Length: 272
Image 1: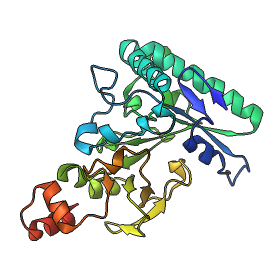
Image 2 (image 1 turned 120 degrees about the vertical axis):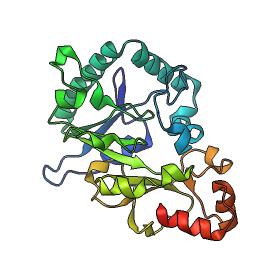
Image 3 (image 1 turned 30 degrees about the vertical axis):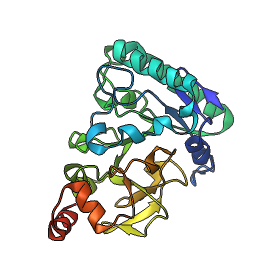
């Protein structure tokens, strides 16, 4: 286990599962450090998850699963979010210090360090550049280190991302507009993560489905796949908003999307 001011390793199921993955080239295990902050507008003011409402993930956020059920954890995540909002430069400098410290820790342990800055947020860190880093962002500051994130911002790849920053888009059927972005996103070269109720299907919307819960190292996934995930926590059981893909009847889906005929449903499903 390792903990910095912002990142932590070995304290949740995702980092533990990823640590079991061995790099075939070096024979070393990966060690993934994740930064968890209070998501969306939980900390007040500006949201840290721009598409949380349209994607329907705000009330089903990973923030409340696992260790997130503890008040002390929530308070810590709110402090981090407020720090980012109130003093972005010192926050980014602290993030860089954590990266440097974790790299040294991994060197001693024989691990390969990997970082996920948006554990429960959706910040465009690629846009944050510091003068003290000669105008570089955090990924360019550490070009030999792998970073990854999930995002609900389907247009993030319209501007070239650093080669060491891997994104997976999070799919949702909370709105037809959001769901319709699946094909364009896949054509951009991103994979899509989909949360399924029950067993994972073999395919979804014509794309093969892989088990995304076996580890969290999404940069190792082949391109053109759906990353199938199981719902986390218990909130999803009572909230039917399209974020979790359920075994819905035709009528249930028509009601959720405000449709009146099965023909409309077929046309919309073909579009997304």
